Length: 409
Image (tube, rainbow, N blue to C red):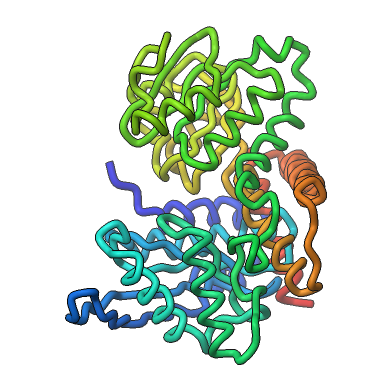
């Protein structure tokens, strides 16, 4: 069942706009990206022939500050998906209250099919082509699907050559040696966990009685599960793109990570039952954290969800149809634009350090991030109470209000 992500995003916007009685002219602006940059990237391959790749950047709006969002390298780059992600970045940055607008972009390529030197030439040529449209105070890209700190390092170096001076603040998610920030690696998982920790303050049960399932065991899912376990919660299931594992008594997350590194998959981990990604979503747990792909919770499976709290660590994991079902079931959904905003909040802290020529220790970064996340949750909860609505709609109302204020000041 395909759900167009941009249509989903516009559906979420429409619900919030109606509650907010939003000015129709401003709504029209929010329904369209400010600019889409499309480039053809010629790359000389190792065997001497030239391949041309398609690259782009969606700059959604910059009412609150420079455009901000990731660059992905993926063969099935979908413009509707990237427009949706750029829009969600606008909302997310406003919710977590960092001075950025929203952007997203990438190149239609399978990076696994390129040699390292081909990948570097592609990355540098892409920056050559979009150089006039990005900059520390214009548009600040970052890593996304299949892009790494190393790739960001090549891009910063290329931009700096063109600018005639080292300009680390043009891109975040860089290697620490090139001005990257401590704490960036764990930021999204840590931020999501900080939100969960606040929500659990009203739960009087022992921590070890609170069960957690995490769909997606990449960087974000791993760190979220790690922090949850260290806090004393019982992580009973995790999954990757191939399969999942479940043990009602709980998992040792570090041992699971070691197993995956050695075996290349989660299946077969000692004492666990192998389950599908679909079944993981339906487990009888207290907390469910979708940390994989969009459209995981849909109209056809939302009625099977048994979790009491959903922390959306992935972008767009819940469709608007599923939202209605989960609301009826009185399941608390902490939306992606709040729950996974730790990554971009830390990108802001990296950018800030670059502009001020400072380097902070990890503890300072995570302490600042924790404050951003806790305040964002508080603001969303207060908005939800004021407008008598769910947290997703509340987050959108809060963000739209901040965007409108920025635009009209």
